[in-house]
Length: 64
Image 1 (cartoon, helix red, strand yellow):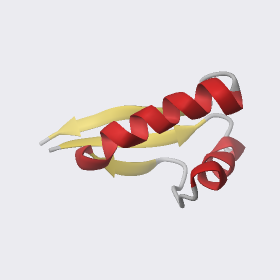
Image 2: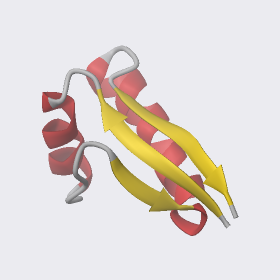
Image 3: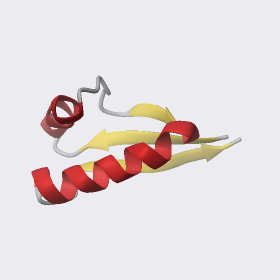
Image 4: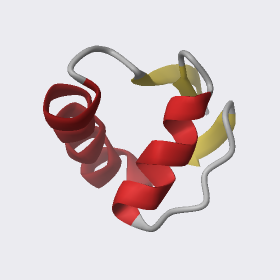
């Protein structure tokens, strides 16, 4: 299993992302690989169409 971490820079973008998609992610929260694919496309959409830049990131933390 692969573990990812979702972060926002600056951190207030996480509130906007959560509001936009009706999520409750915390900045720096770990995400499992089963949620990664759908979340990745939502992050790309948000960064491109809402934040107009790389505000939200999903980074691989470890493979198990």
